[in-house]
Image (cartoon, rainbow, N blue to C red; front, top):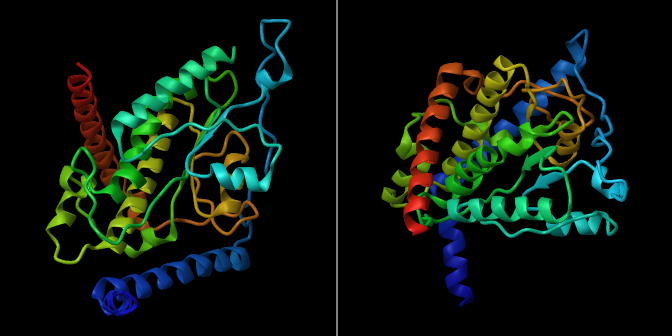
Length: 308
């Protein structure tokens, strides 16, 4: 058994995909910090945003309602155990959801709305943090036939945001969406946006699963989606979208001033840098939005068909 595991490990590190990952991801990380250093050193007005306390909800109509019901509600995917470890007194409610499954996302939305109703809480959401993500070394198809990495890291985050948007827009105080991205998006210099690429289905045809490319693509798509959502909200006069990278940056993005939107947080301490030039391609962002919406509608129709 040990000999087989050693052979597998040696084969893994000798693949072109591994070395592409090692070189391109290292370069992407160093380049990100170089941009941060240059911005701090040479910019006359380095941009960093302070953390602001979340806005409390308006007083409930019921006089018997407790102060708990005025706390802003945050959904963050993938960190239940970490939250409990960091703060054992945290007021946390656990829901199960598989972000690679559209059916599971819809089931979660219904469960969450029922919980709000049963807890006599305002039917709204103040903060959504799309944090969950995976890196797999082999192609794993979902029930819908998508690549599991693309489904979890991007399609799942997009779908969860779409189904929760009515609750976010119904918030009596400014709401926010935070997408946890990665410096690895810089490793992608060009990409074709269509249903096949977004779903990751072509990855099944490769002799060796391109795990590093799949992960980098998913994080690039998440940034393109973030900026396009920001543009659409900006048109409607209600921008509140922040892509970011890293644990400290999650707090920076979540607690940034309410007017801050469409900003890439990196390096902690409220600091920001520009993401790759490709992520600001508005034409590409619009195409990804349209393609993702088409996939979302197809998933909705499939979900309705299987519910009978």
